[in-house]
Image 1 (spheres, rainbow, N blue to C red):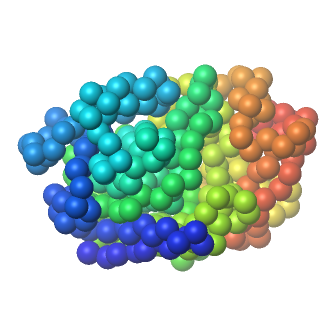
Image 2: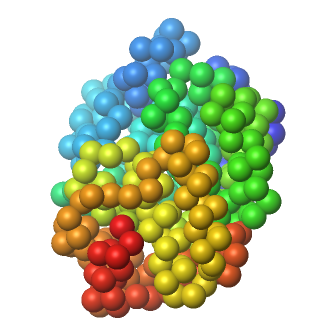
Length: 344
């Protein structure tokens, strides 16, 4: 097991345990009542391990990541007479952790919480860093909080039961962090692609650890996304627009968004064609999509509604000169419209 700690400027601490047995989550609970918010599919697989805890089961889908779902959970918490002495544990992938973290952050003005992260996307990215968001009127993560989980358990053995599509989704977030922070990590993914697809535990744990460490380093310096943390949005501007118009999984949308952002980076003269080719080859090799057929106008409307818009400009993350470096650029909406048509 490896442990990474995030200590924010505000003094909050979040510990991530990579390779820990999920059932040992009880060892990290404070001396207070714990209640679990758990993905119904995870409960079907692992529910017997949580029989001594009250569990609120939820459907983990983007369409269900809403205020209505949070309301239903809060009604259950009230019914169970959960008070400020309680501790919330989210058990599931990124959607479940988002819902659980947000609910814990607002119920009785805030309860402490932790996560048992069960998907590759969640272990490598979504459950770490303290962002807890829900969707609103089709807009991705429009309502949310910055609040750190006290612990995150990443048991890589749980990835054995992860459906193939969900497994591939996690790879896109790992590739994202490599592209913006670590050229050596990108090369490692290229060289170990066969082992990755075979779900080799040693390789996956190394990639999860590297992803978390890079993200943790950024979060420590910029918890509230005022500057450097924004580079973690690489590939996500178009991804969120795709998700607003299609039921495509988040990781697949991010993969398309990565390819789009790479092409725009080349358009502005920041990277070479060889880098574009390397990125596309890796995405295809791992079974991830690179393009979308969604109407340009629908995508643009969704981008305009995104949190990253600033007046008539979009704050967009680009690769900067080489793999492993990223920068942010403000792009006029009219220019962005042309780029969508050319490079989506």
